[in-house]
Length: 341
View (tube, rainbow, N blue to C red):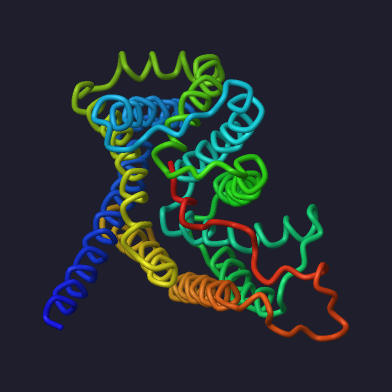
């Protein structure tokens, strides 16, 4: 009995440590990126994204090939181009849009809009793939959509370009997640192997546009930056933190339950919003805070409903007028890997 108690205590302690380090890396990456755009005036989101991909590719190579902390999942060359390359393209768009939104709007607003992802995922699956969902899934999306609308209407630092980038980033995240269900079917990828294969493709996709569109601006910034060395340390440090975030996701997935992960994920948004406000002091109105809270409550409710439906036994009775092949009890998505950078 004593051994079981110690084992339970260790499990709880490990879960808390996993969540805290995940929060730490996630909030650090967000704050560092905002600092780069706002304080360092390095306003080149494509270049920042490219640096993140390069650091992540190097980090994944070191973890798998050098330190051998994770076994490499072998993928044939044909499958890399046919399955992983399309994922990498959407993955790239997702990260770039996130960084573009960070350049123009506060972290609090960007994080709230990002919480719209469950709604866009369900809507895309229903519209494009004709999947049907339990009514409770649709009901759980109401507070998410309502909270987003309230937050958008009362945002004091509203910027159309930043808002659109964040919103299309949600669509890109949903598309990436849905594609993963079909393109990566049969591959049991963890976050590190995912980065190992996708980051080099994403770097290749992004390098030319970044060079053509931002190369001259980056060169001018390098020549005029008053504290170049410290600024470059922060910029490349954000890339290192971006890779560490991927590694932390791998750890937290294996240390928590699905329900705990969902609640911790929504609390992480609240932590990021609070930290960004303390650092950047962006104005937040009362109704804006209410909208953000409603959205996070909706996301928690959505995760809870998904968990309930996933636990439902295959033999659970359905109404006679609902054919078995015309209903999806829960969206076919894995939210646990949606925070990859």
